[in-house]
Image (cartoon, rainbow, N blue to C red):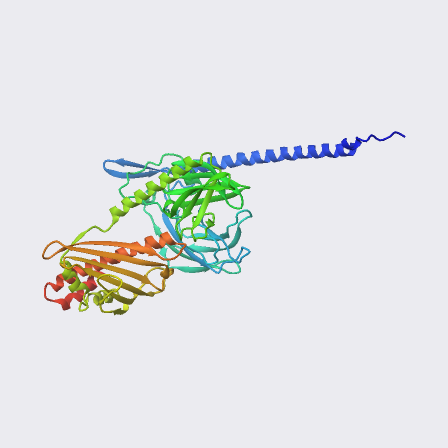
Amino acid sequence: MMEESPLGFLFPSLWEAEVTISAAIFLVAVFVVLEKSSSSRGGDERGRVKSSNDRAKGEEIVVLESEGKNQFSSNLSKEDSQDAAYMVKLELLAAKYLIGANLNGTSDPYAIISCGDQKRFSSMVPNSRNPLWGEEFIFFVHKLPVQVRIAIYDWDIVCKCKVLGSAIIPVEGECQTGAIWYNLDSKSGQVCVHVSSCKLSASSASSFPGFVGVESCQKISDKRVPVVAHQDPGPLQAIFKLPQDEVIHHSYSCALERSFLYHGRMYISAWHLCFHSNVFHKQLKVIVPLEDIDEIKRSQHAFVNPAITVILHIGAGGHGVPPLCSRNGRVRYKFASFWNRNHSFRCLQNAIKKYRAIVEAEKQASSLRKVVFPCTAEQFFVVLLSDNSKFFEEYRSARKDTNLNLSKWYISDEYDGQVRKVTFRSLCHSPLCPPDTAVTEMQHIVLSNDKKSLVYETMQQAHDVPFGSYFEIHCRWSLETNSKSSCLLDIKVGVNLKKWCILQSKIKSGATEEYKREVGQILKAARAYVLKSKMDEPAGSTSSIHDDCK
């Protein structure tokens, strides 16, 4: 009998060799099959992208100027060869009682709104079963009636997004509905929308240069030179549905930090910071308006990977992917794996500086300029603001405000001058608000010793509106007497947010614009009241105020 070699265990047996070779052949065969399938899918995807680009190119608008008049011509695709005859505008307001799809009983809802072949995506609200959107979507259709479908999904970072429910809204004809709650076709859940539709003429139907899914934060001047959109849409339009005239200033390859790094690409424009990733066939999109960015700073990922941390203002949550949370309540996004982190940081920093400079210039251009008021600063206080004046009573009565209570002026220990408290109930016109709301207004006034300068400040807070306790509206009236019968009046309006709020930017802009309109009415009524008082007929001022407030 042959003696076994002591080193025989180092050599594989015949059975082990057969198993190894068979496994290798199997792995090679699987790799070849997967490679062919992926290449075929890539070809299909390229074909779809090319066809979508061709369609987008056909839908672009060319704006021309001829003989001092703007003429609009559009070369639509075969599908949209005829001018859109109707515009359907849907405002997605809120949802409530949604199904809790997460383990903690909440959901990360976002909505997909479709009308025919047109589709729009809302932003995602993290960790909420009662989300508030307040986003507007526009559809162009050839004829009515049509059906608008709203499907609400729970966003998931890896798994397939779960359907939380859907609702179909019929649009029978030209109409404008109020805020209506629709039941979802699920165990629970309702969605609140406001729908309006109108007919477009042939000339106006061809004058739309494009539309986006979610109303953009971009401010476009009315005096902008007509844009010639005669180029293929870029990633900002194809991926993020941003306006046609928004272009990429910088683009970088990087990764978004979540449970692991999602590699993709960052795009920086004049108005937005965007990120797109497609890992494991999971689309990740991040759209952060530059106005929501509080600061950016250099950081590290895993101590060795240079990164950029983008910190947002309190109340700003970004769009598309839930941001990371900080201890101080602010949210942030962290991007890593840059080829040159410092260069990317400087470019992003410059983009934010340019954006803030543009916003500041717009504020100065749109601010309420100094106006000449037909009385002196002292007369302004005596006629309009003194305890004996009936101006505020008549003005609030003309606006159909109720339960007005004006306290007497008293000297403040905290501030210079005098203060008083005003309470009343004011009518609400927003679909998400009750019919009326309780309002508290603190008024502060300082009159100089020579009685030629007057500062009148108000702080107003509405109690019964959504997020009413989160913000205050401040207004400052500055008067300087320039003659015996007139003064220069400067008015400034601002909103102070006291707490974290999801709709911070929308609340701030909406409240500011609404109060500017009210200031215009107060100014017009006050001017009429002062002119009447100079005619020795103070009792006849009521009718003029009623006329000015209508």
